[in-house]
Length: 168
Image 1: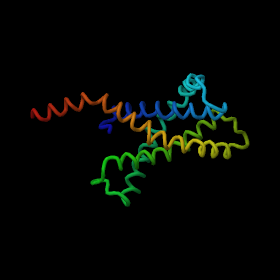
Image 2: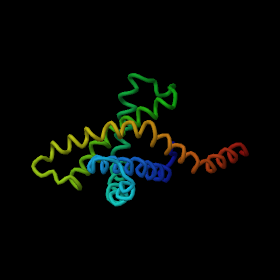
Image 3: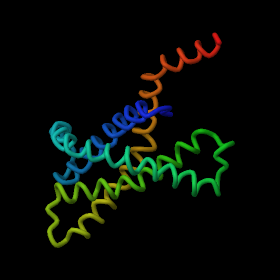
Image 4: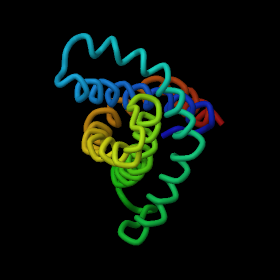
């Protein structure tokens, strides 16, 4: 969907907010034994730390890897030049979660878990607990919501481009 670097930055910021905030709420709920209204406020404190980490990882590393994985592996299964756009979105989203979940779980383990000598075990458990939530949250809620918001932010720009193209 993003057509230039500025749009990529905006898309990534919106996606990071929706994904990271939800995952922080989920992890706080796991830690305290359930969901409460307090979780929503507490999550903002961690979002200040985890949001920039997620942005840097996604924008500079993971998005490039996810595209390569989605287009490299999926081309054997799906013809990306002729397939439905949803197939592309699905492949990229799945690849993105596959990379981001372990990396963000690693960051959370380092910053918040006090794992000590059980570091690897705690990181693997954190990743295993986070993956189903990240996967389904991305595919069913965050991805569609973010794409909807993004389309509406840049709708005017596309309309201006269409008018100027037809005037030429």
